[in-house]
Amino acid sequence: MEPSYSTTLYFGSCTRCSKAVHGGAGRGCRAMGCLYHNTCFTCSVCDKNLSGKTFYILSGLIYCEEDFLFCGAHPSPEVCDICGHLITDLVLQARGKPYHPSCFRCVVCRRSLEGQPFAVDSDSRVYCVSDFHRVQAHRCAACKMPILPTEGSAEAIRVVSLNRNYHVECYNGEVNLT
Image (cartoon, rainbow, N blue to C red):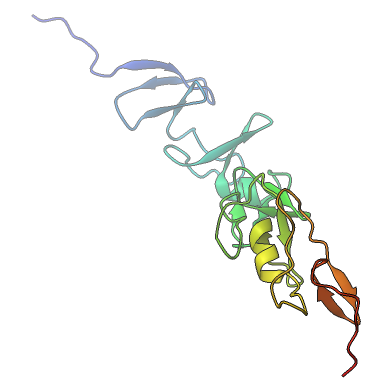
């Protein structure tokens, strides 16, 4: 007669209910270094099963994504000012508003502005500094070219006379009133 062996494997005790976790795949899961029965690994608010799903831990409690973001578990869910979607990871703050880092881009060249100097027009569109000066620059009344900052400078120098803009080198001090 052959000895009788258990056909179920013992994995340890469930962190939530403290009962033994036996069996094969689908009966238990590991999360944050702890062992759970699949039926015990649930959201602390709605009791939704979280095995294999996105979850959050706050003050020792486990939350599904919806409860973490919408039910007050998360201190203040941020919504990207550009795309309008929730920001669940890194928040880029600029102009007092939250953005996904991938959304905060120049409206002209689409280059990421994360950690870069930027400018904003009167319609709150965000530009890299070079495109802002190129697109929004005042035009010289004498030569009709944009008045741009000199190399290495962030500001353009211009002469304003009778509501007209001039490059310093283009302004000759004469005023034609025709």
